[in-house]
Every structure is written in C-alpha cells, then in structure tokens.
Length: 231
Image (cartoon, rainbow, N blue to C red; front, side):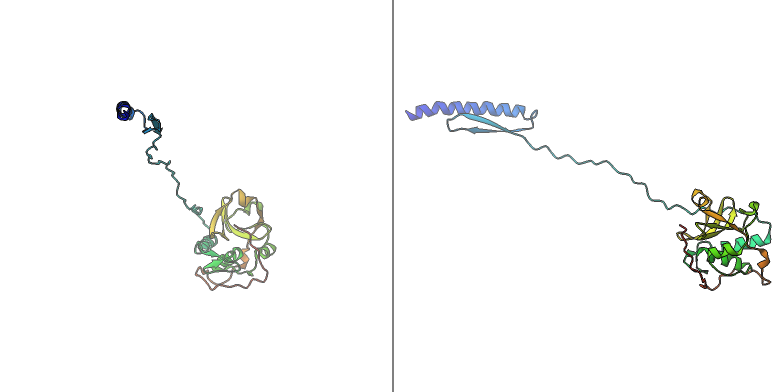
C-alpha cells in the first residue's frame, strides 16, 4: 500500500525535474544566473536562483600622459659690437667668468659673489679700485648722466644696495647670482622694480700694467659683510 502511494509521487517529482531542467537549459543563455532545485520536506519542488558573479573585465584606466620636466635655459647674452677697446676688454673679461658658481665673499677664479665679480672683471683689464661690498662701490663712484645709465660697463645696483651687476645695455646685465652663478640676466619686471641706481667706474683708475684676463688667486679681503639677496 505504501509503495502504491510513493510511486505516483516519484513519477510526479521526476516529471517536474525533467521540465524544470529543460526550462533552465533554455534560459541559461539569456539569464546569467544559476538555478538550484531542491525538494522540501513535503515532497514539493523549490527552484532557488542565485546570481552568478560577473566575469571580471580587464580594468582599463585612462592613460595619463605627463610632460617631461624641461630645464629652463639661461638667457643668452646679446651679441655686442663694441668699438671701444676698453669695453671690448671688459666684455672679454666678463665672458671668461661666465658659468662660475656663486659663493659669498669670493672673487674667483671659480667662485664669485656679486661685488667680487665686478672687482675681478675690472681688475682683469687693469682697472684698480678697492675691493669691497656693493654698498662701497655705490659710495666710491660717481653717478652717471642719464644717457650713460644703460651704457655697457655701468654698474647697476639693486635691493637697497645689496646686489650689483654690470650693464650690457638697456635689455640686460651681467652679475653673479646666488642661484645660477655668473650669468646674463634680462632687465625684466623683477629686476627693474629693484633698481636703486647706477654708478660708473672712472677710467682714470686704469693701471699702467697690461690687461690680464687670466684667472687669478681668490681673495676674500672684504671688510664689510655684504648681505646679498639676489635670486
């Protein structure tokens, strides 16, 4: 009697499982979820659908292109056509020190501060005056006429007389900068806003000795401490 009751139920369960499997197979392509079939305690069939974890796609991040850091080249000095032999000698002397590094209270041959470069450049062509800080040059030499301010060889002073350079023309000057050493710099907004004034080194200080543009022994005999604030 018991077998007669269980047999029909097994037939029903088998048929149900067959149709359920067919339906799941047909819908597997359309539905990416997995279906699990279970039979409860009462002999009923329950279909449990579980989501399937999506296939991990290759992560594609946006490509970041960074521009390489390019060092800014130092401004190129202009080409000068100087007819005066004195100016030619001074320009040659300055050019012989281009690229030397900055060092406070030095006059070369490999290191200069701003006033040390001025002193050395004029010494190289036989012009002798007392080595000192920028402020002492301001006090020693006379102020030039207005049309001489941007003439080659004029001394230009900046930032409360704490920095000095040698004028090339109205476009730029030579100096020993804390960052960059002996170099040419244009008279841009930064420098023009810091100009204190100008002085001319008198040619009467020219020595009888012949000009010498060779590197000389460094000297550090500056009595007054010069606090440079150039860049």
